[in-house]
Image (cartoon, rainbow, N blue to C red; front, side, top):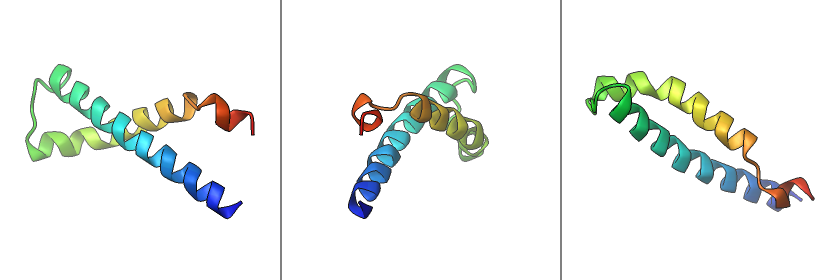
Length: 67
């Protein structure tokens, strides 16, 4: 049971990181005008993290819901 929980956390975290990177890239290109300076990326972290977390939360796999 503990191993299953650890696997689920790892899978969700990996999905979160991939989605977060995609959201940050889209955000920086279209909203911040392709600014990839450190201060622009730092400003983008909080709201893109929330967006990525919501996407991961609302797009759960069907196999995790059926268990």
